[in-house]
Image 1 (cartoon, helix red, strand yellow):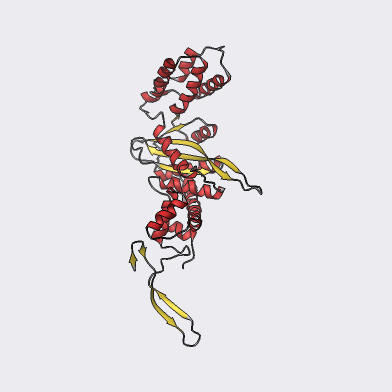
Image 2 (cartoon, one colour):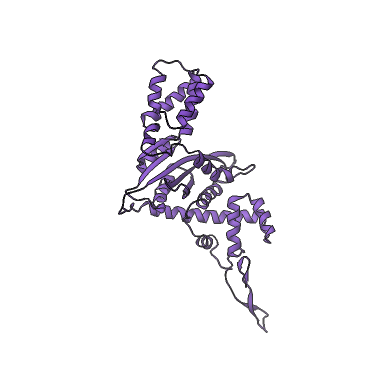
Length: 348
């Protein structure tokens, strides 16, 4: 029988033994698995739970005539998330071992942005306590098609995340002749990853640089109109930070502790040529700030994991961040029905 939710499993024939009274049914469709849900119901429930808290998801499903309690929904979704992560991570690891193929025409430019976002996670110790753990996220997209974004997120150490990013490049179709432009907040682990990826240019996000720039200007006792003028010029990409520091902060300038820290940070990034914004723009790299992309990136993770009252186990958070990244990607890594059969292998 075909319903609004797909094919329903119905009894076509039922046989009963005269002697022992046992019965045997012949089914029209074996679409149900051990989750107890039709595939279409499970797919929609999983998609909703990826976007909304479990309580809200349960309420929406009730309006559609599907009664799944919060606890059952949480259990089903976590199994699907973990199966998605396992299958997707394995595919990315396999792709990471493959070479980048060559193209017969001149390459194109890709932008890769990498950031960290902290989420609350319960520790696995005997006395559980809540800790904030960093979720590493990479966003990859062609420079001329920023809407075609590929995401990957990982809660854990740098090495497995780096392997996932290498696999993401191949999944997106990056070729040997393509040019990779990296954009980040300058964290050490991100700089190491950018070097491993062989980016053509590594750019310090100008919005992130502007916060340190403002601290330094305050330490130099610049007036509000002066700070506003310089800050706007920096955000427009008109200031080369190294040149500006040489002109306005001579050796021996007395600064407070916060301003000294900002100066050291900007000096380091400038020496690494991460803040040559006029040169980047002259090369046609208008993407020097990640305001919109970083906002979207934070909403991918924080929009679901940092909601009020939400606490996550490590496994639950790992699965959710991976699935959230895939949900917002231009092309998913996994097929839902393959994941469903992995999560619930026994047919009903």
